[in-house]
Image (cartoon, rainbow, N blue to C red; front, side, top):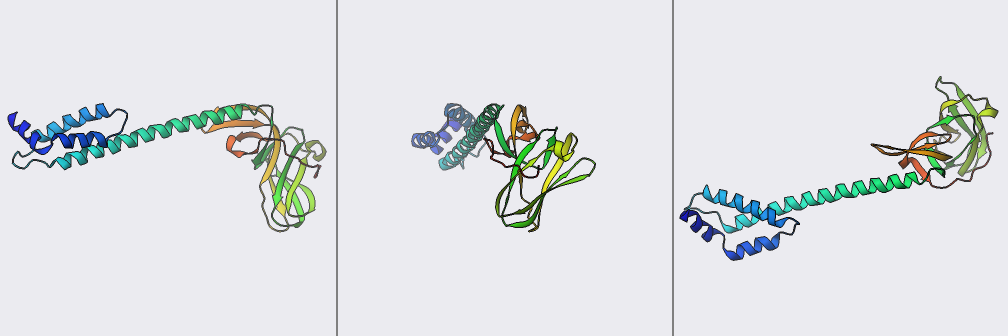
Length: 226
């Protein structure tokens, strides 16, 4: 044991220990210091007494441990932030029940009620149509005529079009070859919490992920295509 003590005294003096302690800035530095001392003693006991490890080597090892612990703390903090963000998102989604939202859609869940929506053209189109395709592949074409660049509102009235209840894919056909994104305005009837985040049930649309919401207010639309 006297050999070990002499090696420790020669390889790690009081000033070096103070430098090590100042280099560590983590919440549980005391625990890490105890762990490090235990490892350091084990390392000293198994080293060659004639060639002791330099004190700066211990300092480097301790700094490395400090960095690892700091990364663990940062990872824990990021996880906490993700949980907080998810909770805030769920609360925001829950507050939308009964409210009008505008969402990006590729399909509609028609139940006899008229659905209002819009899309935006980057270029004027002399021939514009809204295409609805049911589960059997039957296509219904709603002619919207010539449209200038900008927002184009529309209304889909299943009763007037003779469309039975069901799910329909929806797309836009233009003379210019554009494929604009279709937006639909609808009322949120309920919100379901899933592993992927909140899922809103929007009338006329069906289940919509929270991130598909484009506006948290009713979109002003006209009555084209009815």
